[in-house]
Image (cartoon, one colour):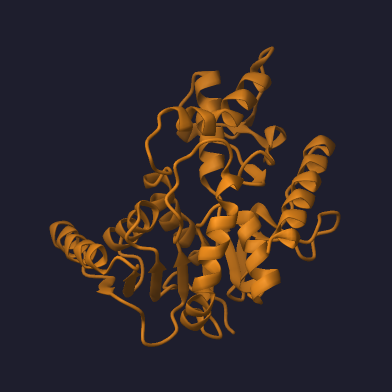
Length: 309
């Protein structure tokens, strides 16, 4: 298969398009002109049709002709299947609290996902906990590791915002990433943080404060009792991820660690790019402490996925 061009993906389906995350992703893709056809699917047919009408009107307001938005399943395999299906999240505790219920939901959708992806399409998983469920889909449902990635950009965005607050700068000037698990096993990579392209001289206590800020995000969100997960960031992130991969760039995704020396064979957040249309994760330069934390996160993800029924 030849390398994908920025015109990829032409045909996209979103499973779970009625929910906050799925509809946010649909809105970002539809209004930014990503692809030629966008299929919206959910068990709530009325909401899917309402979203289709609303997003078509939004395209008309913006003067966007593509993608054409369709309600229902594609009749042929697509280039990219975005899986946003999830049980309603009422955050309290840890993202792994949703594991068993969401695994059961994905099991019921596995054949649909496989059919829509066909022999060539990629699967982008948004369902949490995304790293464990990606590994589980691979091991227990036979999804090829080289055709499966998960969404993992929000943690890095929150890390960048925490750094910007601590250093009194704009978030757009900060380059930083979080690797590992989407949850308690996240690994903020302080060693590679840059502000305006320059290494950071951390004031006393700054690293600890930033780490506490990042680690405390989920608890702070839970205390708001919003009755939902964060959604708009994920929708914008899906669009950014697809654009970056299509243009040949590197982006943080939950991807297979297969072939990376020293890491457990599992799925975790790592810099990833497409090689001949298939995601390939790479290991950036890390401190020994960061690498050890990444190994620990990988072992935890792998163990949980292996023992999940």
